[in-house]
Amino acid sequence: MVFTVSSWHRQVRLNEDTDVMFVQLCFKRCSVRALLHNVVQQPATETSTFSIFGRFPGARKQTSQSDMSKERRVLQYVLQTASRGDPDSVLAAVDKYGREKEWNMSVGDEKGAILDRFVKERAPQTMLELGTYMGYSAVRMVRLLPQGAKFITVEVNQDNAAVAKEIIAFAGLQDRIIQVLAETAEVIPQLKSKFNVESFDMVFIDHWKDFYLRDIKLLEQNKLLRKGTVVVADNIIFPGAPDYADYVRTCGKYESTFHEGKINGKKPDGMEKSVYRG
Ligand SMILES: C[S@@+](CC[C@H](N)C(=O)[O-])C[C@H]1O[C@@H](n2cnc3c(N)ncnc32)[C@H](O)[C@@H]1O
Ligand SMILES: [Mg+2]
Image (tube, rainbow, N blue to C red; front, side):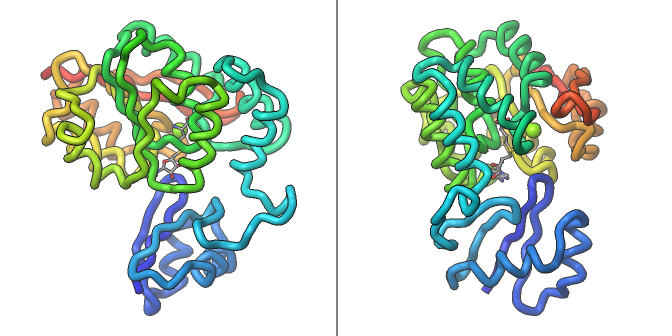
């Protein structure tokens, strides 16, 4: 059996013979016990993908509030405190929960405001997001898109995608967002044929940081970028995507600039805006 273990910035494959110390080295902030706990909970399929930070399909049933995943607790808070059909109130609720109760890896309001500016400036008719998570950034961007714009967001974790679906519907944006449950490398080559897009005016990259470089190259190879496409990548400083930042700044294909913004008002981070030269 082969397992894929992922955190929010790294993914490794392992099998029964993999040295646990190797896995722990790959995930410095995670205890071996946490990793093994998740390995033994996996159903015995040939290949399994799971996150060390979430609950997995087929894992224990949630029987109480404290047993719920963090993402489900955020969803519950949104449903209880935001106003149905009001995207701004949904964003405010996710931000408030993150600040006052439990942090989550949504882009947040400080970097979100920078993202808002980029979306307004570009006014994309076609947009792709890599990494939906709970749908916060999708709601954030789609509320500013011109009517009739096509917005596709890709997520590999089905629990996250399910929470995002409910948050997006509560915000009233279910008819304006195409949610795709897939691994980005698998779906990028199929975007043209399956979703009838020629290329994207804007792309937001915010999935596992090790995949940024692989996936921007895939977007280039599949001719999904064109002259003027704005590619925005989050978490350039923390957890960091140094190989990606180096590529967009030095390969000559992009006009690239860094935009600073903190995580939760504290931790230094920022986004890279790279305009494809075509
Ligand atoms: C940082 S979160 C995205 C946050 C979201 N953009 C927001 O700001 O609201 C990263 C998400 O990317 C997903 N992900 C990671 N690698 C992926 C891949 N290769 N394909 C699809 N989704 C992936 C994770 O499951 C996680 O939900
Ligand atoms: Mg991010």
